[in-house]
Length: 582
DNA sequence: CTTGCCTGCCC
DNA sequence: ATTCTGC
DNA sequence: GCAGAATGGGCAGGCAAG
Image (cartoon, rainbow, N blue to C red):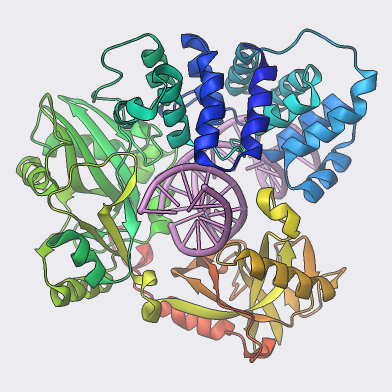
């Protein structure tokens, strides 16, 4: 298949906003593909070259792509970068610059989808000394052969940001329409995708006319069930009647596959993490009493003797390839299991949660692994008090599950509902921050010339403003327009004398405006200067802007550094230093 | 040998 | 992760 | 409500530059 067809279809998709229209356009492309091409098309549209658990990543981000564009078009990296800032999209940059150099280029043979795919594989597999230059060169070679429009989409593939409004669900509908003429195969395709996590393979099987598109298989991760959000316990019980409320712990999702002595571990995004957690492997071998099992869990650093839950910033250090054994001893993970999807040759995903949970409890022993604590209730008061207890012991909140629901792989739905502390307005950390700079936007935000803010707290001791977070979420388009207008008027060339920040925004502004920012947590930060001692300051986790500009506040009225330090100390957290065993 | 940029992936 | 927007 | 696309802090690892 010609890559030109891919690009032309992508262009049509980009112009279309209705879902049905997109499915129609995409299905026409899919109809022209054979069984090998369809697999490649699916991966390319996903911005990858293989399913996530294969571990084959293209490994090119914006900076590398900028260099490729520079080489292919003859413009300097500076020029490419500055155009990128203006357009907010490297696809459009590649297209514009290829257009300009068109007259000079002599035409070569047209690109095919297969060639593009193979080149990206080659880029993905390039490593070692000199690899960065090679990767950049290989992409530039493709760009050299691309038309401007092809360049637009070629460049967006390694960035995994095609900007077509097409995601997995749209592709699944389009596959069904391509093969059957309507969406009646969607359910079957979706089920197969949820079980195999490989839409490219499902599509290939579909094109080969296979009876069974995919089935649950040990050592092939299934797409994890996800939860919707809710902030009102009453609303949760209205949906579920009776709910099973599991503690929500702050670690990372771990999908465990076991057969005899063989164990594999997968992350939420289905990366293979088997080699990172040797102690977990041992625990599973010893303390899961089943020959075959697929278990869903949250893993985190945990003090087995005191029961203390360590903060995420400790747990995350375990996500590593080197020094694994040493870290496994220093900061062992505990597995909090909460679901089981497969047991001794049988899929359990269509059983109700309460039943799966019973089966799980039967096969989990102690030491290094436990079934996560929960209650079953239909009483609002009881749910609220359990939520309070969860917060007190250092959990993030609750995940409330419909006891009668199947394991709904792959999609968010109200079978599982997250109920976090921060969703409850009165419990959230709300700060008043001073805007000290702002950033240009990318993609849809390019037109606003606004992508986010750099914010600071007030340091009374030195009468300065110290950076504490960027904010890129929470504003409506209307607010972005307003913010840009206001900030444009007070932007300054240099960092103001009273501002202390390592991060450099696209534009500094005079510290004048105060906004309200909500966050889930205050964390120690290597990058922000608020409360900085040595190399560590404070930052906000999951910041978002709330409401409007605080006309009633002067910058000196903002939250202060000492308030931040006080809030940090009040947070429920334990430190490794206070643990004599560490 | 150290530092810093860039990327991918956790949340 | 959270949030907003078009359908 | 779904689907998609904006955006956050911060960790480790790979590689290049100093």
